Image 1: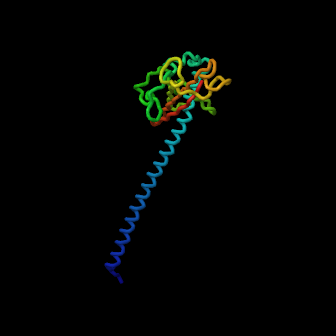
Image 2: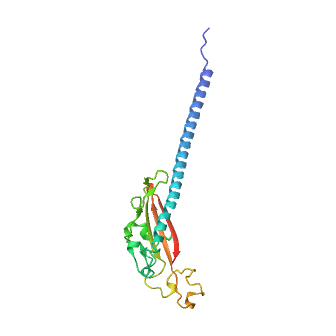
Image 3: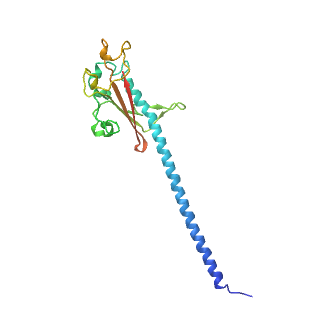
Length: 209
């Protein structure tokens, strides 16, 4: 015998369908949120990886700057250090810097006045130790060296410069109290590394000769 479904049965079926649709929408929104979270995590991890790699690449800039002070380098002669040398990216006086201590000429390319070449894959290629092939990283390294003194020229007053506590003379105490004692100024090396996705990293190191 054929029976027509009652209204209560049809009403219950409609409620179940509505509940299923609401649950489906909730699951869909949760899936979208999960995908977005995963993408953001991947991007964050990638950016951290870029930053770490650029910090390691900055060591190339530090090494290149330090080589200028070694025998055969453009700044090996102490007399040369008393005046600017643009070809070695060197300033004999402290460069104007921002609140974070980074020289302005590294923050704004339009104020760059040095003539030394940047380090890049074309000038200092990186060789893969396994394949022995040149690796193109898309990284450009620029460094600048400035003597932490208020002016150029021969140092006659130690208050003109930031002076290293490690002097070359070991036979006395303060340099002014020793015959032939000379102040040893501090030099600041600042490196800017520009990498993929316009990622930038700045590294500084202080040295004394």
